[in-house]
Structures are given as structure tokens and as C-alpha cells.
Length: 103
Image 1: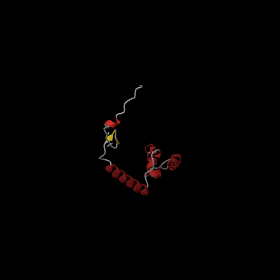
Image 2 (image 1 turned 120 degrees about the vertical axis):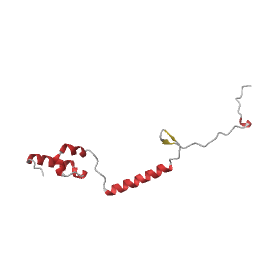
Image 3 (image 1 turned 90 degrees about the horizontal axis):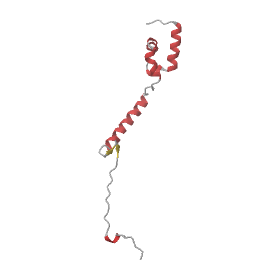
């Protein structure tokens, strides 16, 4: 175990609490040994709680299921496009409109 001066211990112990590094799984001893290594974790999001991990797993499974349902559809630039299935009906001779000329 390493012995630290009181000023060092007070300053970095307060920073450890302020940065909430405990939420990232870092112990005070680890942080005191190398503060520069663990301080960037303060900017990172906290790990998910077990309930949140279960929800994330369920959402990931749902996304995979939906992706499998649309995997056969054609894509344009990565986006799924629905193919259009319409046909132009030929005009009959009765519908052949002609411009009337002035008489």
C-alpha cells in the first residue's frame, strides 16, 4: 500500500468524489495511483444498470427482427424502397382528344 501526503490525498479524494469515478468501477486506490489515467472517464457515460442492460438487449433483438423482415426489399443508397407495381393503361381510340381549331 502506498502512503500519500495529506494535501495530495485530500485534493484527489475530493476530485474522485466530484467526478463520480466510483460509478465507472474505479476504486480510490486505483485513482490515487494514476489520476490522469482515470479522469477522462468522467466525460464518458456511466455503464448501464442491469435493468437498462435488459431493455437494451430487448431493443437490439427487436431491431434485428425488423431488419430480417425487410432484408429482402430492394434498397437505394441503403434505404429500403418499396417497388411500385403499376402499369400505364393504353389509351383507347375514343379517348384520343384532338385540339379543336377555330372554324
